[in-house]
Every structure is written in structure tokens, then in C-alpha cells.
Image (tube, rainbow, N blue to C red; front, top):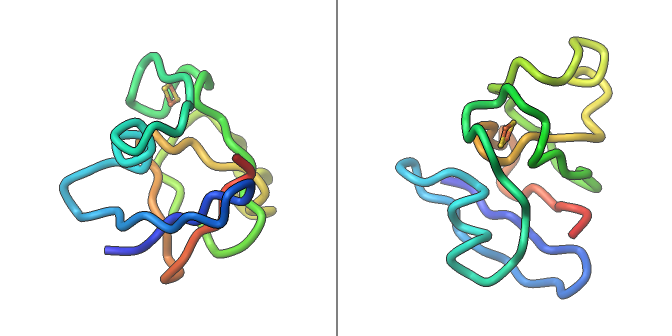
Length: 87
Ligand code: FES
């Protein structure tokens, strides 16, 4: 498990192994548009301000994955204990 931090509010939310980041955001009232929920469509793209994403999508390029500034929260996760999102 890891936590996501919402940049605009400073709120931290636990992301358990059986929930996606976008599921956790939705259940806490943080709006991120989702569509495919499989890392394909690009709808949920969100900026990463701190932490290291564990990319599981096929939407972003390899270069974007390496740069670490974007994440698809419907499917990707975090390698760091906290992932701060530009929300
Ligand atoms: Fe389609 Fe996340 S909802 S990539």
C-alpha cells in the first residue's frame, strides 16, 4: 500500500492493494475523469509532483514513463510511499 497526496489540499489517502488510485480519489470526492479504467484511453491523465510512479498503462510513452511527470491513476500505482498528484 502507499498514499496519494492531493497537492491543492495536502490531504493524504491510503491506496490499498485492491483499489486503484482513481477509485480512492473518487471515494474521497476528488474528481478525476475516467473512461477505460485500463490505461488505454488517456482520459484520467494526471500530473505527478513528487514520488515515483509505478506505471501500468499503455497510453503514455516510454519517455513519459521515465520522466515521471504524468500518471494514469486508473491503473498505475506508486513505487514510493507517497505519490503527490497535481490535483
Ligand atoms: Fe483510460 Fe485511465 S481511464 S487511461
